[in-house]
Amino acid sequence: VTSSSDPDLLLALLKYAGVVVLGLALMIVFYSIVVALVTKKNPFWFLKEISPAQLLAFSTSSSAATLPVTMERVEEHLGVDEEVTSFVLPIGATINMDGTSLYQAIAAVFIAQAFGMELSLSAQLGIIVTATLASIGSAAVPGAGMVMLVIVLAQAGIPEAGLALIFAVDRPLDMCRTVINVSGDASVSMMVAKSVDKLHEPKVKNWDDNYKK
Image (cartoon, rainbow, N blue to C red; front, side):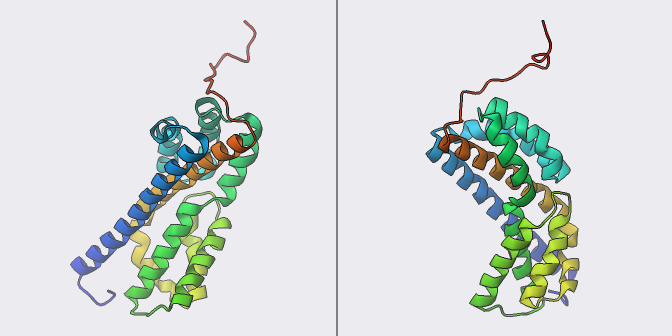
């Protein structure tokens, strides 16, 4: 790919981005199905109620910046008790970077193929494990996944210079994978709340509920 013409490189990048987006979409479907099975809630209702947090995650590319909105949507619109959200969501915003780990694994394989490297099964498994661990240590800020990708590439013996190949499409993919990270946090919160009997009927609060009337 590095010695091919520009149209070929663009096509390769589009295929790479398409694979990442497809993987992220499958994760959304998986989360919705698991939430439906565990909590007996309509998956479309779940996606509708969490959509404002997803939209903010998409626009900011930061789970940390989205955390207040995520907590509000999960507590008031999904019916999760505050005891659960105040514990699960901050931890999830810090270590639950499942969308990032998927992106890093796919990116590492793409860069290896671009350099003409053959990855054995053990090398691919090593990439998966390292991507998972690296995503846990990623900061909940825009572009953190790209920085941690250096660790994944180094572990597999892939040249770090290959990051330049995917840098152009990283920003939109960062926006997409942050949506998955936030959706995963909300899904886990609902399942934890269900397991400890802390999942109630949603009760939307008004802005002046804490003021004396």
